Length: 111
Image (cartoon, one colour):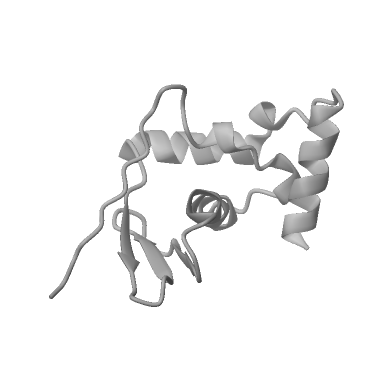
């Protein structure tokens, strides 16, 4: 259900409606919390079958994963929004990543 609400909200934004997510108190609190720690870091493990798990190393309780890496970034962002209890209609990717901010993935290989 979250996915459908998220998609509908993005469609509404595309046609010109402003959902005012940047002024929602929950979003403001999330951004303050992230600002306090600087950034949310994840340890990402990928398995031979292509599946993966991402777990935050600096905020307990944010963990997610998938069967393929196709939508890894979106899945991780959804986990962050869910952790901070942001309703899906307020979830906009730009709330979690600033302009020109690199996305850093750490991959560990074991033999």
